[in-house]
Amino acid sequence: MTITGGSALPKDDIERMMKDAEAHAEEDKRRREEAEVRNTGDQLVYQTEKFLADNADKFAEGDAAATKAEVEDAVGELKKALEDTSESGVSAIKDATDKVAQVSQKLGAALYAEQAAAGAPAGEPGASTTGDQPGDEDVVDAEIVDEDDKR
Image 1 (spheres, one colour):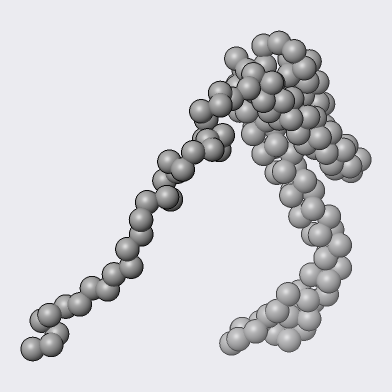
Image 2: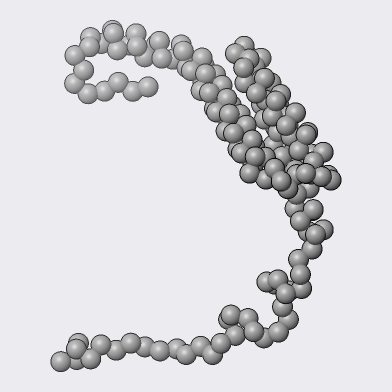
């Protein structure tokens, strides 16, 4: 903390404020970390629930359905950890956040695998072997000359 400028405070008040700030620095750091961990957990819960809602029809069966249930359980654990306001709650939130992130990645991989198993037709982009690609046209290099500048 820096106290500068034309402060009307006496020098001993300024020193007292600086000592208070130094004494509470560790507590402030802990509170900041807790706030960041809670915000990260809240964001992950929101994003994961939104992803599940937006893609609910894609998780109807197979590996994705089983993984969806696992993700929902992990999100429930994270929500429960976010309700805990004790000191140990921060580590529980971190653990639950990591679990949701890992299980969500499994869900994304299962969804991708099911889409890949459905297969893309041979005519899809990237599967063509003909020369009819958009970049195959003749390219002409040209220069624009403004005739008015010569006058």
